[in-house]
Length: 107
Length: 141
Image 1 (cartoon, each protein chain N blue to C red):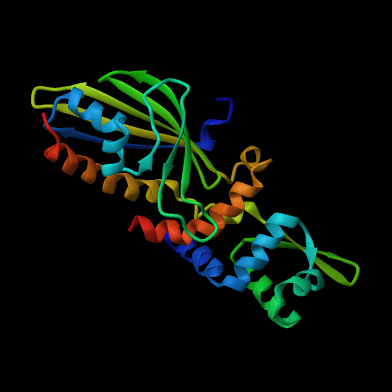
Image 2 (cartoon, rainbow over the protein chains, first blue to last red; image 1 turned 30 degrees about the vertical axis):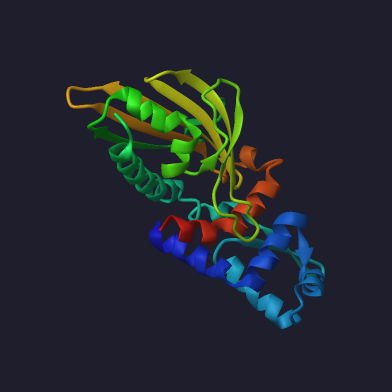
């Protein structure tokens, strides 16, 4: 679980790559060319980002004729959404603050 | 809740505190006190009341958690919805008087966004979740 989330996390840490991923989430399936037009980087760079996203399980590709269509793969985000650890850390911290407050409050 | 059991996850934190339930109830339900340990808010312990918890805004996330009060049983049970960054969840506080004080139990149940049903129509929240995730994680450390 840790390792999987590390991969997804690292993959989305790059702003350009994250923008490409968000574009696929927002606007659905797109070709490399369409993504390049928006990304503001070269087509090889976009292809490289897509390859990284694909290996992390965040996008899937679908060849059609000469072009390849890419779309977001929601399930790839599952390792990131380790809800329990996210909110676990949050609530443990807040419980400590609550106990601290109770010490300071009038009875 | 018609989602399959696998779609839900529950987090439980339970702790005994050397204070009476009435005092803890105040900390859980009075806005200025909630602000001291949880977040800025416009909370009111009234069933059906819609409120916000407001944390520090971050890039692409306004820091707002939307909630609605579901259950108010003074000094015993408090429940509200907790919706943020595309995650819908319910928080239930239970206070049980003990010899030395109160057993405080917090249970948060939510739906995993990798469930197809939760994705449909929730794309915007999902995007915000992705964009805000790093900052959220950083803020929680």
